[in-house]
Image (cartoon, rainbow, N blue to C red; front, side, top):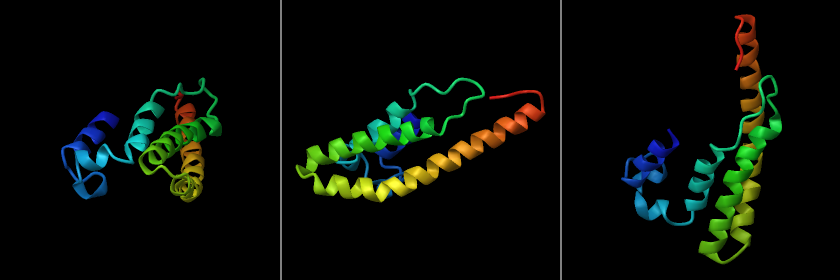
Length: 116
């Protein structure tokens, strides 16, 4: 799914930045896209342990790689640090929401005799 999303954007389908395609993809946001792809390989927590830190780790990988590539393209630390400050509240909120959703789904499945 992640690969398909990125491939669509690369060929110009407007899934990110209005369809800017390869030129946009290969510039400063490349780190975010790479982090997005690598975060899919973070091992999931053991069954019945849905740790909030897991969701935080996903966002940390995405933001860290994104900021490194932004720094490389811009040569300045001020812009990437601004981006981290802007993204941090959303990343925390998304991590908390994801954590609650997984807990809710797991409780529902446990009531049905199954689990994640």
